[in-house]
Image 1: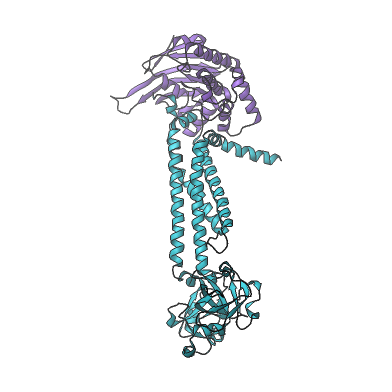
Image 2: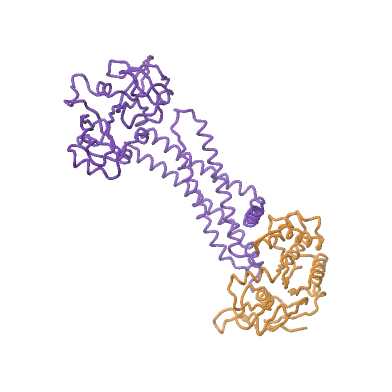
Length: 225
Length: 384
């Protein structure tokens, strides 16, 4: 089943024709379940816009976007929040952990946003943290963890709600090469194990080794490599 | 059992983010809790003081079950100036709507104990068999005391008076003996001494005054009856003014001004508490803009984030108010009786507590508004 469908999608900032900025230019793309896709391109090429639309944060100006079968261009903001919560796992440049939550609670928080927390959620959080090699860090707070550990928690958190799609925005940008590889290996392994579609946006070509497809973005256009 | 477990879960769910943050930044929130507690304490202290003071000045009327007071027109509604003849009571009883009528006589009196120590009191005489007889806590009721016996308010104990003591009233040659003690009666910050009406007449009128030419005089008539009786009485009887209990109390010199100014201070303090809370949580929310944006990007709804802020505001305010109530009652219990006018009225304590909680909730609105304006897109770290 197709998890992300971009059909001739454009995002244009500004109303004035002469000064309008075309951040995404008639982009079309289909991503299947379990696919691992890399997107590279120079800064300003529209990677973030692509990710923001794929992540249901903004709506396209033109074209149709399906996220796990839902057309997000017609959904109200409240529904978009639900799509983000249930269909998408976000991994951002910096780990963006909440300073006053322990590692386990960082993951449980995602369940709490959905409504209820049960004992199973706690067990699931612990299981995920184990998978990411953090079994002895369960009750640590972010300030007591290394950058690599924090980013692994952020990746584990993206899996917590069992979303169909994982979107990673430069997840290794704040890490050194060794830690970066570690995080990428874990992400790829878990994505494969749970059959998730992953979109990895990066400008670091070395991080593309796990990608089945690589797409280059230039001036808002998507070009398959 | 099962239902309880569910409730607990709901509770926990609502508090998850908010409570964990309280735990994580203890110092910050403890300081805020201290501010709320101290201000709430100040509020209860002011309210208690206002009530204590108004009791000292008006309790004789607050605790007397009369609905109306009838003054002579020449008195300008001042108790010490009003004089009526006792037979007016029979006329009053005949008026439709009057359930009971009796009298109340007043004069300020300076008394001296055996050591010649001076004390200002408010001397009242009432119909000892009428409907406004004070309840006795020690000794005899007014109806049973001897002709020169009196019933005094328990406040006199703080000045060393006790049951069986005698004292002299300035300008009256017969010593009076304390034969009964009541409580809760003060007027114009002076404890009340209840005497027989003859004694009152003897003290009120100098011997050559011949009772101002009146037959069996008294100060005012008191009436029990339904609402809106004033015009009926004034039109049936000439030469009288009728005031409701509420009007009488509010006309006691300084009563309204004091009550309004002290309670005004309490409201000011509460508004200040609200503003401090508003600023504190607004600044915290501004500081957490990125964090909230990130949570929104992860799918948190506005309501979810709002709940976390409301939880924190409520936990701090309710804890602060509860602490302040405990402190206030502790202080009230520590004040020796008769030394300081301070009284905590449960209804007022609850009322002001609720008011503070409502104000605290309103103070969080600024933060809630900011939350709705946070754009999840900023979590991307750079705008596209």
